[in-house]
Image 1 (tube, rainbow, N blue to C red):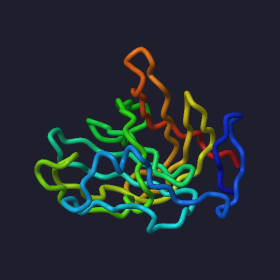
Image 2 (spheres, one colour; image 1 turned 180 degrees about the vertical axis):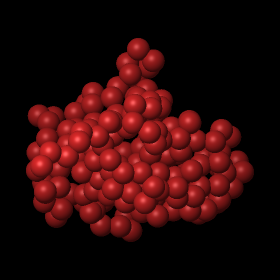
Image 3 (cartoon, one colour; image 1 turned 45 degrees about the horizontal axis):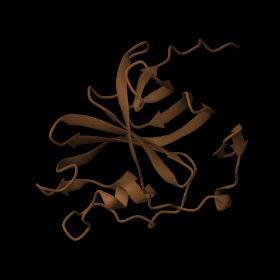
Length: 175
């Protein structure tokens, strides 16, 4: 399957070379790179399908669920961790996009800095986008810990940035 890109009209196939790595302005504005060891961005070429979950011991423990899309890592904070069993649902709060090189980041963000605390990779791998719209994202994850079909959908009743993340039940193989 080819890489999927986003457009206002829905799913559009894009070649890797059509997407450049981006250093999101909101990400840069929240960080002091002379104090924080976090990546400054621009050091990783787009692969089109990076998936990573980082355990983040900040003011509140949460897991950062990240998917490569359009030259950045689209990111959600998942307070109770990603679901591991089919049917489990977790609140996922959209946060600022991160540069692609954040997918390999592990370290300690110093006290007084945005996101202060320890960040470690909990899971990593690739994903396949089955559907990606403003309201719903369906993916198939191939990670070291998580695998299978997952879905994110906007939970507008809870707020503008709230999504629900759940592991879908797998269809039995037909043969």
